Image (cartoon, rainbow, N blue to C red):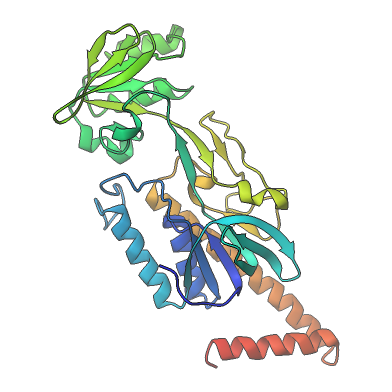
Length: 339
């Protein structure tokens, strides 16, 4: 995937999923020099297809990403395989250090590294993740419709998750696992929708010829199920931003971590934008791609403002050293664009 390229860019996009590639596409079309740094660890890699994406329904994730990479290349964007270890300020903006020892300089950053799903320690669960162990009804609900679904309680949103999956199946059971059994209004809502509550910790998944056949409790009881829905704890891939003073914090919904930003993707650190699951754990591929495009447009506008401010200063004092520097930059830009 790696392209031959330089080390100085106007924008470095860290993360090569839907948000990052769509952001890079927008910036490349805006005639910005862009590099996408991709570790190749896409969150949806275990899934058979991407769903809810108009015009690309059911496309395999790898196929969608490869098409996106080609589109970025077509507009002059560069792709670099690697993992970022740290980011620091420098005179040009940011010094991006990769784990293999290479370095890249960029004026702005778009961070789209996504998140890691931390799954409960239940035997057999990780092996079936992305198949008959699922998390999102909008991603997988149609594929598991009318089957016997279990929902494993993992956090404060698990009752909501069970109520959602009830839309796709009449046979839904709620496994309390290590959490207290629902009481009060929550218990009433589950009962009203015909969702049975199973108390006790889950030990393992029972597997048959076609996948999951049941859920085994610690005491040995097996409850027949064909699908298990799990809400994992979601951890943002953002440790490399620590030197900038930008860290992931707990998400208000109690589902894990995220890097806070405003509606445009701008963070508290000037020059750094975020998009996709790293800032909003709930977004699917379509909204993530849209967020990448939105952040890219804001980044380009920010660069335009900076360049215009410098151009005005040079216009007012054409003999200043600053003017000479801007003039050199303008010539470089014209050469880059073939003017």
